[in-house]
Amino acid sequence: MTKIIIESGDVRLNAEFNDSETSRAVLGLLPIRGSANVWGDEIYFSIPMHVEQSADAKQEVEVGDLAFWPVGDAFCIFFGPTPVSNGDIPKAYSPVNVFGKIHGDVAILRDVSNGDQVKVFKAENE
Image (cartoon, one colour):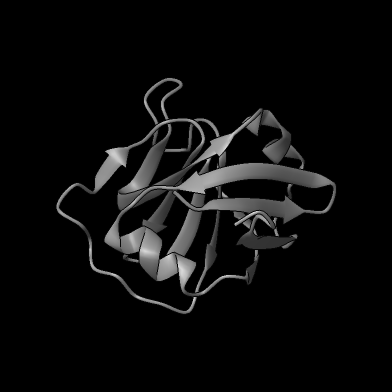
């Protein structure tokens, strides 16, 4: 599994990609940057690729999941409930392809605001 770093301002988190078609497609784009859109406890930003919804795509995800939103061609970071969640479980607007997981305290992502730059790149030991 590929290890990556997600940064935005003073926020820095380690994450890991799973072994999926979507993760391989995103990996081919790294490093990437985007302008954060904050939707509840989700950060998402457009990336220059399109992958179809996978057979295992889902709306309810886990805290710390990284996913690709096929409808919006967006990289998504889930760290808590969104406006469409029922309770504390993160829920995407529509099904997403989960391709990775953040390691560490995702609550720090609440320091990221709309419009902040988000960088995603391979960890140096990869």
